[in-house]
Image 1 (spheres, rainbow, N blue to C red):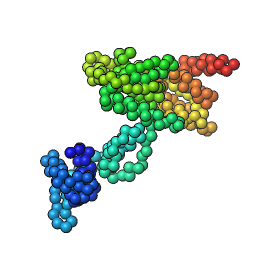
Image 2 (tube, helix red, strand yellow):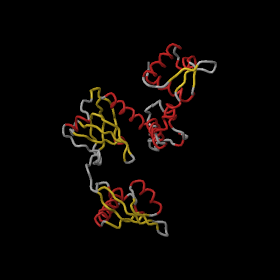
Image 3 (spheres, helix red, strand yellow):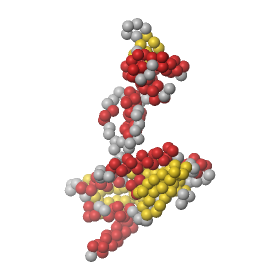
Image 4 (cartoon, rainbow, N blue to C red):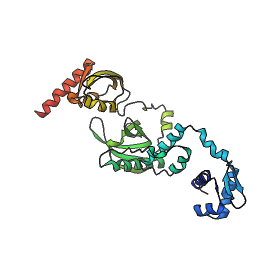
Length: 306
């Protein structure tokens, strides 16, 4: 007896209201006797099934049980469906979306999730995701080349714990064999990924129990960072790009469609590089230290082209 078959069995009853044992046997490619064994097993486990005799008879489920799904709010039900769609977009092959759709009274086609980049290499993200997911579930160590924030390519061997989507990117949360600590590795910076065939023996639970420090709220590879309050003026053509990366606490739009904005940014080495990428379309008002760093960086950039 397969759990997935019983799950399907119950949801067929919720959807169809009443089905004959013969119809169920044909649907699941089993004998009528097996169907009645399933009914007995489900009844013992607390699922309120019953038989209706007569011409229009069959196996049915209590309407009260079918209505129990309404105990979840519509927001909760849509969140479940959304999660399934998100995982399926990465090739997780979850076969429960049709079943979960019974939980929602809304049209579930309102949402499509695709984490792959717009580039033609988007399919590679799904392949990498599948490899890492398989390694986590089978508890196998993973090896890969990784490009650090300093641009150094290093071979890494890790004990994978979980996949994390945060800040518009996918990361692998794992215990790093070389650093002997928890690390986050950005999937887009990985190459030559493979399973080593060796078991992953360091678990997150054991790591934290032994005194290890969680890096959940740290910037990958950089640790915890203080935040800088930045005031700037942004051209209208670049406001949307700014909003893609930062949350503006204040924004005042001027007659020329440019905007004066205030936002918090992490004090990291890449901050000025990112702000300079706006070119002449952004002017930093404060703090003065950030303004001066960008001016110096712009001068160094000009030297490259001379």
